[in-house]
Image 1 (cartoon, rainbow, N blue to C red):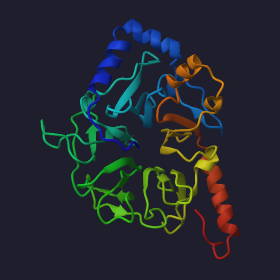
Image 2: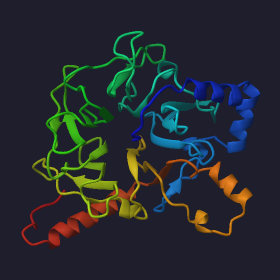
Image 3: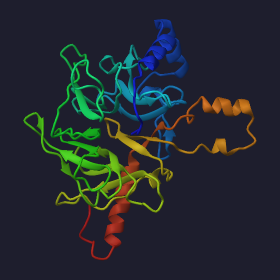
Image 4: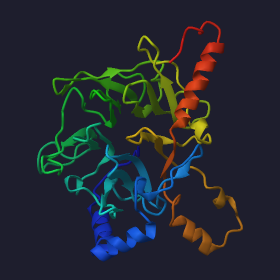
Length: 357
């Protein structure tokens, strides 16, 4: 997720609304130009090679962070940061008469900073993180909390609610992801952690989240871990880490599998299964588990050509890759490849023959 001092994004929402959604005709024309018809925003599904997701529509010259599909695949949410001096917010697009609509800020998120979205498996609760005021009309908070809205009988989302402590703290709480039984994983900079930012787990009991449990070692380190994706059955974790390979000084995605006794096994680098980029973050699975989405500031080899003329470079700067990050996707078989190698490594390691996910 982004680490910025955030303000408001109303102006961007209005600009998108005025510039792209001024009429039904404009919307239809844009949809046709982008060919946004069919599942996954009409994009050709990727194979084992990482692909940019929806270039020019989701992945643009702005910076895009975490993204998530509704369980039925008919709605897509993603975070956008236009650049310095602007805030980050969440945009959504949905299927309407078979076509995907122009992205806009959901009504319950207008005028506030928001990022890090997640949806429960039944599609009835939508989580996001924000520094919005806990009291109506009050000033923004000094830290980000986890918030949620519930689906109403009309199909619309209700009013935002803050679950409060012990789920939220007086420090930043970010990136919720939920299992099939409602258990939440997230990261936080709250006191008592192992590092600057740790991953926590909180069970849902009788509709209330319990005291979060720090996952501890070997997941958390004395550095920073976060942006955690948990499998719906809690069989694996994919997360961003600065601490598991401190020699490189970069963050990347790591994966850990669970042993038969429920313990998390030592993680190994996940990004190397996706062309080995060290800037990957914000992992998320598609609802059907077929594709792994993530954000990245991956290097575009085309920009290495010093002979490019000004007009070409200008065009590149306005397209995907021109911002801090874009959204990418890859076939989720990369997770199984990681699992197979993980089993093999543990089988071949002295004293670890009995271990396995």
